[in-house]
Figure 1 (cartoon, rainbow, N blue to C red):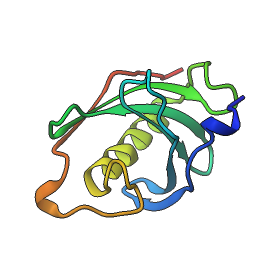
Figure 2 (figure 1 turned 60 degrees about the vertical axis):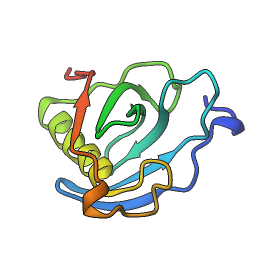
Figure 3 (figure 1 turned 45 degrees about the horizontal axis):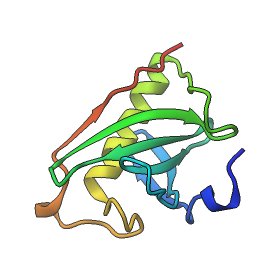
Length: 120
């Protein structure tokens, strides 16, 4: 269970390529490499880490169940494809830190790479 210090900022609703979803950014801990986000759609709610290191590529990793923050999530293949498309859309169209703000086309992320495969 997440402590109050780990609860996410307010959710932003996004109409993505695979349907409506919500994203929130959790307050950052010093020891973390990247930012932790919470993804929520009609069927799923989980956390993941996004890291970009001053490049135009975001690296997405560590998809964990929101309920306990440590167990890996599992999706069917079609669910995983849809969720990855929505997360990619988020990073390409929103400010990575101020997620409620959209970004200008010239400052957008060009690539989103996922280091998790969570198909059951």
